[in-house]
Image (tube, rainbow, N blue to C red; front, side):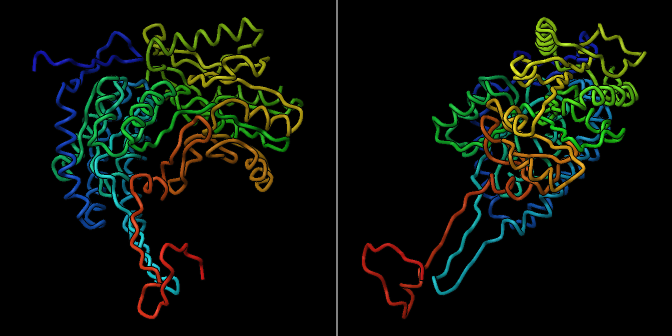
Length: 485
């Protein structure tokens, strides 16, 4: 309708270029969607798990069929390099297929019948689930909620970020055709739409990925409604090189992109690097050389670009302020990589990747999650010292340990406050579909990926017949506590 509010998205690589619009959900749209989802969820939950799995496989095929166009749209609306977007879409299809394959066995009833009695544990869906998803990896971070939620028998209502709604909107609308009508909805909007969705009494689970400020607001609304949540709220991931870490070209190339993929706008990107003091200069030289090999800053659609712009002017201004603050405090900045010759960096929200040295731990670019293409490098003298420094702060999403000795790396990793610790890699190259991912401390609660990611969308429901009350069981005194036999 002509009077409906629209969200317009501009290209971060060419800020004057309008990419497209999506309609904001109107008053009443949320309630209608929740009602339709609730009806669909009851029918969907009664379907065999294998039937739900086949629908997920069909959705994966539909996503793949539309990936070429979606990757271009994703690059234009978010600034994510085209190759990066293609990878995200392919991985999203793999997530759908993983849950399609795994869910039937993971959701099967667990039954025990022994001397203590008969016990059946069933995994039941919540019903209607709301997913609030971010802009930096909009497709995969939605699919990581969609796949387990629908596999478990729930309906899903997705509210995409207004900073990257376009590619996801098209994909979700087409994937919805793989499921019964009313099961999968997309609702665009801002804080008021999110609040209406999270606070609705017909929503029984909320999954959120995003920043701490929004996470607090979502958590408060969900708590008021007594609605359980799964939250991933970002991190300030340290990468720690032990004194035997190999500074090979291959390892350095991998570390550089672990810091700078998606212009550093990744929750699990390396945000600070700790190196032994005596290796500091050698490391910075190796890191800078690696960046010269693999970092090409430019328009997200240009061939060969590996680092695009940041998402908007506000992000660029925030990062510029962090850089200026660090330089005032005595930091040294070393440019990383090269700029593609066909790119007009003044036309978009480009922030040049920088290696930052001569920093203290109290500098904001080290202490905070900078969420940009900035790489602070900090020397350390003792392992106990670097553990304390890495663990400082309120966030604990990811971390990595780099060592030639895998056993040593695993032992060191056990001392870090991180929900996911990588060894000799970091960021997406270290992920596994079978490995649960999530944070500790203020980096969130709950898990995505793996069997635990599926369990987030189910509730354990138990039927129990104690042996004491079966024929010949001998009984039990009224009101007595059970004592294991």
